[in-house]
Amino acid sequence: MANERQQAGIRTFFLPMTINDSTGNVFCLFSQSQVVEILGPRPIQQIPRSPAYLKGVLHYHDRLLPVISLDDLCNRKQKGMPERYRQLVVIRTGAVDLVTGEPLKAVVAANVRVRIAKLSGQELATAFVEREAPPSLRDSGVLRGFFQRHADSVAVFDLGPVVQGTFEKCLGEPKH
Amino acid sequence: MKTLFLMQIGRQLFAIDKECVVGVGAQDDGKVKPVEENGKKYLPLPHGNRAVICDVQALMTGAEASLSSRRGNYLIVAHEETLMALTMSGKGRIVMADVAAALPLPPAFTGKSRDLIPGALINCTDLILLVDLKVLLDSTDWVAHHGG
Image 1 (tube, rainbow over the protein chains, first blue to last red):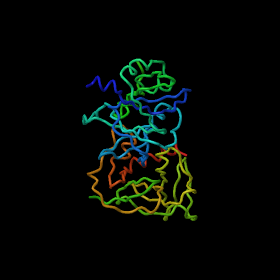
Image 2: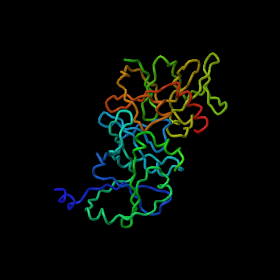
Image 3: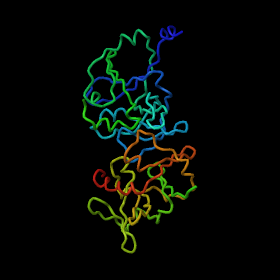
Image 4: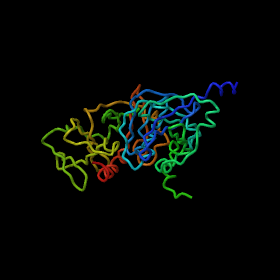
């Protein structure tokens, strides 16, 4: 059964990003198990005095979810980007609330439509070649992997520290 | 249940304890012009009082909108001995709400943003942000240094 599914392909989501110090196309990769839902544009409630990469909150199934802009998170020296989103991707971050222990979801804002591709197990194993990330991604504090796939670059992020609220503290501490 | 004053800023709704509200004044009233002192803007009030102007929009965008370009109102609120004039669209309205049902912000929001917005009320598709006036007053210093 699992083998059949692997042959049919694993659905992967590629969120186009704008990275200042990268000339090629950069996508953020989300797996099928990470993506809960892709929503169309809707009003986001901005929260005063929050960092530029936190665009606000979205009311989703009786919960408030943080809306994150990966572009602003990775281009932190630049002032917040204009807030016009084509799609909002609700994701499972894999992190839990440090107080309640509940799994934390987040919404990632996409300025351009998310691309969906079905990749075979073989392609996942061979088509992604690890390469050095541009400084803005490397220094973002959330990058977990950076790969070349055909002509595109693919970044994998861990948004756990962002949704747990420990991200700013982690950035402030000296790197070992 | 608590009586709250609901104000609209941009397309967002904010709620303030009704007991803190002193009054509402028009922003485009040519008779009263804001005065600037030490980077802060003040709205002159009757009897020699003045209220520090707090642009909540600037707290969200980091950039102050031109006071003269807006056709809104000031919501005058009192916190302890200090008066604040909050810029808002429309005249606002009074509502009753169960503040105990307010949802906290997600843990991603920390520090001043969390202190400023202790919770959010859900009313159908609307989200109403509860505002802590003390933190908002402290934020006027932040706006004076970072905003506009």
